[in-house]
Length: 448
Image (cartoon, rainbow, N blue to C red; front, side):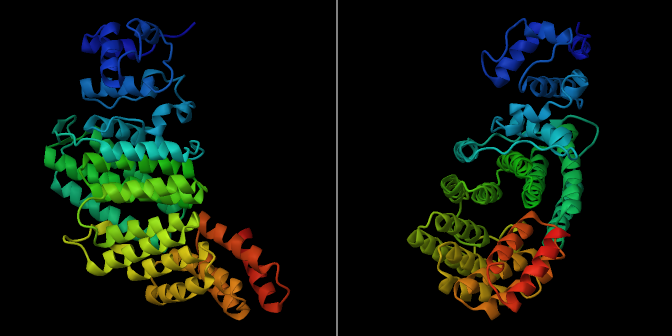
């Protein structure tokens, strides 16, 4: 027999009947989501299925001005099943309320420590979310008076500065430690969205910062091989970027989903996603953001073996960067540089099986990087080794491979390890002292 749930006490405080709760659920989630009598069973302890526990918790939180979770309502039944909730696909309304619900998922579940591992979403699902973002109407920003914690401009400044510091830490170090650091800040910032008090202008700023943190968390999670978790961070961030009316940041997040789809081998969906990102970015097609989007579209075309479309997108990326933007580039786009564009062009030509065009672009990119962005340099050194092997230049390939290993041995990165495995496979087939030296180092790096 079910034990009574705390739901009844919350409804009593609101002076709501079970039928009133059912009407509110159907108003938010759509007619027919639940029956008028179903909440009576929930009050007695039965746990609703699917995403309804989160929906009920969100409704009560908003009405009572408190932070209420599904686990608080059904403590013995929701725990351990959260990974199965459809809400974790973030199929939420493209409104401020939808972003508010996404904040609940971030502050309660998506930032939970391992072994939380939601399943990977198919590319078609990601395309659907991107198209919803692209076509969604803007929601009128509203103030919120949810709690005693007042969120002012000073708090936003600290959050932005902290996010920038964490982004640069990812540039130089990355790894699980930085991911944990980012998710802790993301959990706290998402809680501010739900429980803070702020005016409409501050709310827009706050949603934008949370979008940046969610994008960074998604990138780090994917880099560590947690693709399903990374996708949810990206989708949550997309809701926040929309609420913040930041089309450039939203486009960057969709481009990250596209990039992740390429790693999963879903190349057609990756192309659909990056096209949606470029269409939704807004403004004149110049500056760092549009250069980044164009080069990512080039990579998608390369993986589909469309050399003409790839070359066109690479030209667009170079032009966008050279012309600059009509307004200052967003702070998060600082890392998009001529070095990044050149090296990414080299990788695209390598994927098109044109090592002759890839090699000089990769060399130029690595020269332009200098000592910056060690993870990117490691990946591009590995690509240069692949290109030189394909060109029959064993000496040059070994030199590039050792450059990749010098950096890769210091990185905790799933992508770095994947590229080292590719290097190993390329050199292990060659019977020479140079190749054996690369193989031994690569095996040692992968074993550590």
